[in-house]
Image (tube, rainbow, N blue to C red):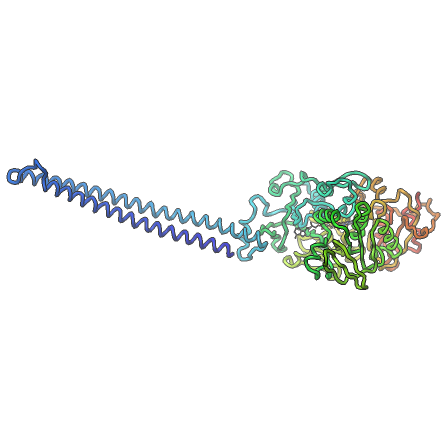
Length: 637
Ligand SMILES: Cc1cc2nc3c(=O)[nH]c(=O)nc-3n(C[C@H](O)[C@H](O)[C@H](O)COP(=O)(O)OP(=O)(O)OC[C@H]3O[C@@H](n4cnc5c(N)ncnc54)[C@H](O)[C@@H]3O)c2cc1C
């Protein structure tokens, strides 16, 4: 407000100044008029006396006395009339002038007032822009006036977050209501895109301009963009409410900072207010960092990447071409995928790639121990130096290098760190909206219909939902974002459906090894694995070639999820040994809770997810899981 007040005071001073000047001008006009009058009077007297003094040839005193008196009389009369007329004229002019001046003053004041209001608004707008905070006392008027001219102030469907879940919701809203008007607000500068290729295919691209094009070759060789749709798909936000058949608009680079669920409205970081009829919160998550990195100070944090967005891919791509060594902290999907991608690059460029994590093998929190160890060997073969059981104690920057000190005394020197140590669901809006968060899993707590409050739903990574089959959960995967976003879209248009479709997820360690999973896959649960020899067909690359899709969940989108008859195929009763030595070429891993299958990993087995889904949905106890494994035809050559 300081800025605003200063400008208002300035205007008042200017206004005061002009009033004073006007008053002075008025006085000088009065003086001038009076002065003119006096001047005319003195002129007249002067002329009279000159005439009275008589020039040469003037009539003499005796003879012309009466004539002289008559002339003087007439002159005096004429002068009197002249003076009278002049005074009257001047008086009229004076009145006219003063009334003009006073009317002028009123107009001036009006003009000043209008300018002042506009300037005040400008000042408030500037302030909101720089601080991102709207003074609540002035908010209603200023926010209203700060609204960019054509932006809709009210939309039927408002989706917060421009990620996968929001995009899926937009698509499903439009599928059920073809005229729907949907506004997505995203704090990223890009249109909605898929994240999985950022740690996979994009790194294997041969295009030197891949960081700009963001196009990649799927494992099946087909090229595509990471963006769900080209810009032409979207309606400019200012046309959303007027365009004939509605559409989807994306407001990029804007963050929702406040949510009023009672009034059905949100406030953006530029102060704009938008009200809605139905709202989706799909704000995803923020990558976690390590306390040891946070404590270490700027020299360390500026040499650390937390990987989530397109901008992170771009910067890590550049860094990996300019430094000698990169260390990835974290052994989960993201860390392992990036390790494989960078390891492969390093084999060509000489970049040293180190991966470290506290578990005894890659993806140790998900895969049973033997499979996790096998994966670590595979990652090692990609050229990555994997450090197991590595707990980071501290990090410092010295002599141009980062020094990572482990709890067991080991030390690693490196140029750059990628911290892939998990995600914090983005629940920044919980406070203003008064929404409940889940104490165990994090995220917004929603019911089986993914609803948090009346007219408010949550989907994707940020939702802690009630799965009617497996209980309360939160899932951080692409396909879940698609499935939950789609369900919310249906429910926002009146379907009132519960969450029933188990989403899947996948991870690929390059084009040759990958897996798909469903349900609760936690290595702390008892597991049963059945393996067979893999053939050339059993790779993510071949799976993509056969299905014609690169992003696995898209094949999920087309299938119905209905598998009515799940019976072991008669031809596969000959059961091969469950594994060949330590070669886990392909197989099925069942995760059990109370002897019931609650999760399944399909290791190098692709496009059989509907069968896995059916097994989990049935929730039956199985006495022989080898028999159940036959359902996946794992012994097919
Ligand atoms: C590199 C990478 C690779 C992955 N690979 C796989 C994989 O192989 N398989 C798999 O199953 N999953 C994978 N995932 C996970 C998957 O991408 C996520 O689960 C999915 O993106 C979640 O979608 P979402 O819409 O919930 O959140 P997001 O995609 O994160 O979208 C949320 C968006 O909301 C924006 N936002 C947040 N707050 C606000 C606000 N207040 N106002 C406006 N905008 C806001 C965020 O900036 C973000 O753009 C991967 C993730 C990453 C990062």
